[in-house]
Length: 420
Image (cartoon, rainbow, N blue to C red; front, side, top):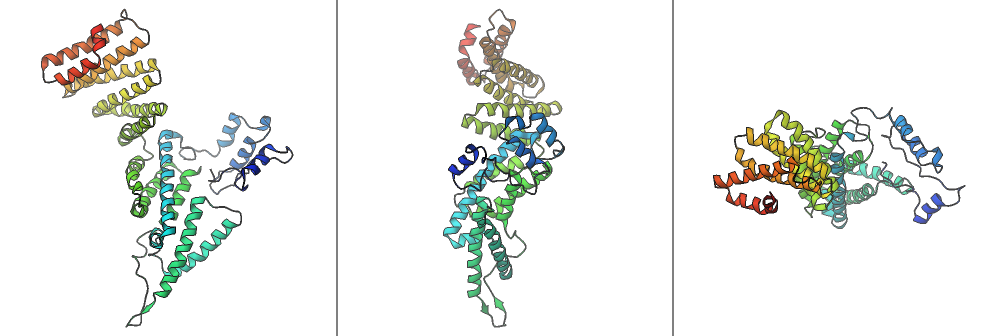
């Protein structure tokens, strides 16, 4: 929450071990460093939770009672309304930090990169000299045992070096013109751009990482500000071009925040987040994401029938996740809902035929799940599902024009159809 690891003031692992596991009369727990946004009482609660004596630690009810005065409705200290969304947003933060680290490294090697990265063109010589003094003060505190976050410290040291060099360059480039005016290194229009966008980015990231007492709307504003700063100020300097590849996804994610029931959010869940976790093999999270998307499309389709097809397709992803995890009863319930949705589509839309094969495929999947649950041919649901699927496939064969689609369906489910 503070950005520092426990016992950050101890320089060696051995020292930490001695403090935690050594002489009982000398051992101690971490001492949280309060930050301005910490709610009152949080530090005391942390100390109690870390007590070496388990009997002295508060239980969950005591913690809830201690936190209830500082957790108000509408605040974002814990982004509980959309945990999946907040977790996904926070996965982007290390990517952005790595990009900043790459730019800092390039700036340390190339003064021109440092000059552009630190946005020194918009600063006057007086502003540069004033900021240099401030930087020396901040970094002096850093060296005296009050460590800054590592990335911020590296950036400020790069900025100190770049400003020192820029002051010297401008001093050498002073020119007296014919009119007697003094001209210095040309700069971009002052005031039109942020004077230190990287510092603004670091502050935005810090706000997102800490349990801040701000509304979800303010979190959304911070996220959108972060996107704009990264896109306009850092992406053009990112030689790896990695940032430009991930920012579109981030922008889609935060565009409507905190309105996480917006149709675009449901689409993002299915098209991006679900597929991302499929590639990672994280099937538990795939299921959670698919359920979140299905819940949104369920609500949207109640007032707008155009979302029925998206709802059905998302339910199929829910079923796939359930089956991978061996939750066949849950898969059966999701398939029953998907069948109902496809039936609505075939009965009410202007393009009924487009949904007949998906309905047949879902009916056969329903039959397969029933068989996995031990239901036999004496069960009317088992027979009826397969009979309805066969009827749809046969109808498409006689209608013609869909032989390739029908053939693929018969090939995929040929064994089941033969059993029927």
